[in-house]
Length: 362
Ligand code: SIN
Image 1: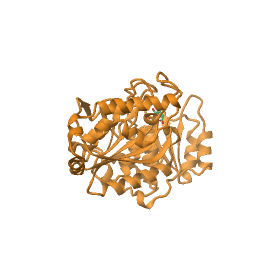
Image 2 (image 1 turned 120 degrees about the horizontal axis):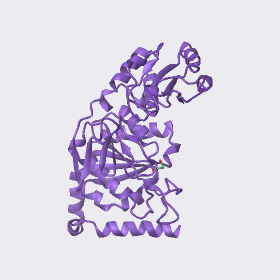
Image 3 (image 1 turned 60 degrees about the vertical axis):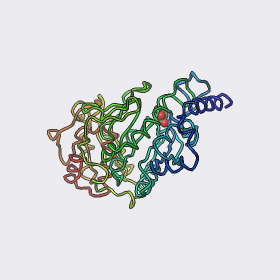
Image 4 (image 1 turned 90 degrees about the horizontal axis):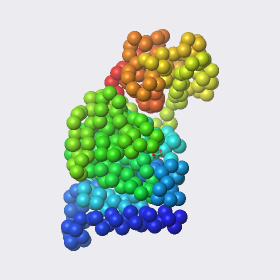
């Protein structure tokens, strides 16, 4: 505990020393005026390694994620005030493996409320990296604003030597305040790289360069403190989707079934028995399904359960050639993202043809 406090204090002291001399010389009234002119960025904290604490400065695994509060994260990076007035709110403080639909809905509703305000430039969400891609894609489909929403995390706890969280957080604020970030949907900023929510995925359990967008690539970089974009986001998102969280307090159950050698229908039967309204098949290759699993899926479809064919390879698409019965094909959405789109689609319709149109669009 003492070590954790001294490490956080050391990080804070370093950050304060590096704060711009100009800011220190500005009168409090002039400084407040400048901040107002810059607009406000809200940091909504949910936990994760970026708020993680370990027993020693060299411990980078087995630490506690979601141990530090949002104000500690903000205090450690005073340079963020060069870009905006910074406000923090604690939405949750968990390891992101424990993320829930309830937290998602609370987060999305709060973001939509904040972004309606003229004084709010953008929102930054601190989040564990494990399920960050899922929260990012969910928000990408339900946020109703063109203003920047930027997700950020870290791979090393805040107490580690060379913790990556403070620089990632500063970069996230740079992205959230850059006018070029508008209209690109939810963005993920980590390790100098900006990925768009739909394609972004965690690719490594421990490396600092864990997020990437297989096949389509990152949308931009942050180098020398400058935000640089290299491509647009083509798939529709945020204001162009029909999904409205203001009317939702839960999402329909959708289960993912991961295929393997000697697979059978046990998991599909169990999903239906648990009340699933949808099943995402994480198929092999281009979404292939074991011959012994088909009968259970056929029974599920007959009961009105919507089945989406995705794949377990980590990249690539499942196309219309894999259409079987009334199945939907997931394009290049990975299973965990196909699950989110299917959950939201099921709030509007259970017609597989209409749901396929959504998968072709979002
Ligand atoms: C988590 O996802 O909360 C733990 C892992 C991380 O943030 O990197």
